[in-house]
Image (cartoon, rainbow, N blue to C red; front, side, top):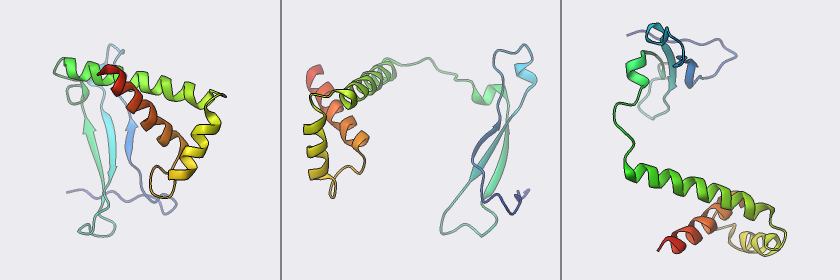
Length: 128
């Protein structure tokens, strides 16, 4: 197995280093270079970096989007919009800030995370 050793200035790399241009007529000839960095107690020091080459077949979805996935995507989008609107709503910002500060030590650590869960609860209740 090959070992990846980065420059001393680079501690670790994780994610796609080169992507495939799916719109290109030569997409099937291109390769994606994917780097991973693993941190675990069983990992030997210096041997936790790996590189993978992926072809177009490995990154293209082979199954259609299910109805559950469509509903989850719709829910996510609507909660995102509600969170952004609520964050800018001057009539509720004072009450939301006070409620966030009251639960901050034992609950959600960021204001956005708190608003996300508030809006998610409201969305779920409105959907039944």
